[in-house]
Length: 490
Image (cartoon, rainbow, N blue to C red; front, side, top):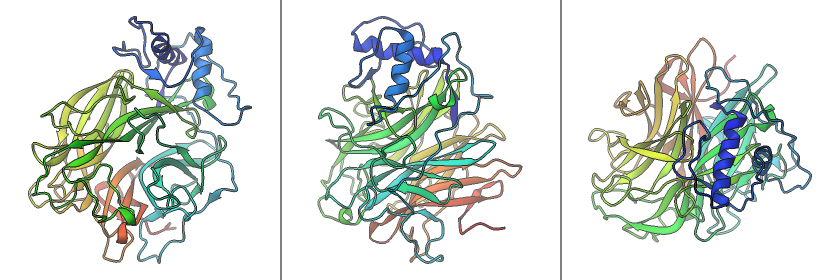
């Protein structure tokens, strides 16, 4: 999704950050999307000039954060512009990827019958993502000349025992064959690892990070190369929170969930305790070099988990953000409701993308013996271009812990959500398939054309906890039925 953001709005975002940095307490007249901001965000380790034009250039340059000193964006801005809606935005495209010696194809895939749907496997053993991958966030960019796909995802290395997760970027020309990197990116056209865990001891994201959503903010008054990416992500710290150890759960409650081999049935689960996670925000100008934006919570997170007895008191995870219109962003996230003993999906609303107000839980557990009896997590919400309705793909948790993917629909994306059907639209594969243990972390992409076709990217888990990223395609405009991709059909 691309959101049009005026240069005046960008200047206001910087003003918010500058207000905190200089400890000036005053009410702002403008904010990122024209709504007043109640709490001023902080930008970590940054100094902003007093001149508004210099502040804009500072943000656009800091979001590159390139280790190379000669990086120069040469941005042009027009301070007289006003915020515009997303109804007919000026096309903005990310920088085209360049070839890299570190870029490698995915690992060799199993036989076609066993790898149906698999489009992105684990990286090489010496890569940053050779041990575990998941949480795909896939975006498609079109121009008159070409088609480009970006996929942000989390990965874990097998090189160092207990190494933390990182977020990486892979690129593609068709959304199926992906270019990847074995290490950190080194330029604005590179691919590979793009963001590591936080280094500050007090931060909320020191143990693990996983991407939730990427929203592209851009301005018709600023050159396309100056588009700013907003990454919403889950950050996990070493802080543990207590929950009632419910013997009715037939699976281990973990946060974050681990699927790689040496974490499966390791016997070291601290029963009754899980790691706390909170939502975070980072910005970038190229989708590769990120600067964390510190929110109102003391740990740097955008907001805290709920208080005792609230449904989301344990943690906040899987933030997915949808731009509904000017001054209206919605965040969908999940938590575990101790009271009901089920996972649930909630919604928060924001006027500027930084300060959020929770609206409550919108989806809980399904029918008895259903694929989502114990609740829903990892929601991906997309506004249908054809009819304006909101479609939610989510990971359903069965009584035994099995994971499948279901769909829900809403006319306005707020509280009026109903399940599309009682059955899952995508389940784990046959016993020898690469994703035979479960599927989840869905990401919906609506394709263009007369036929209302959808792609569903997802994380699959196979034997011994091996993970991969797969793709399924809707049966024409029937979103209640998806089939795993098996190849191009001419």
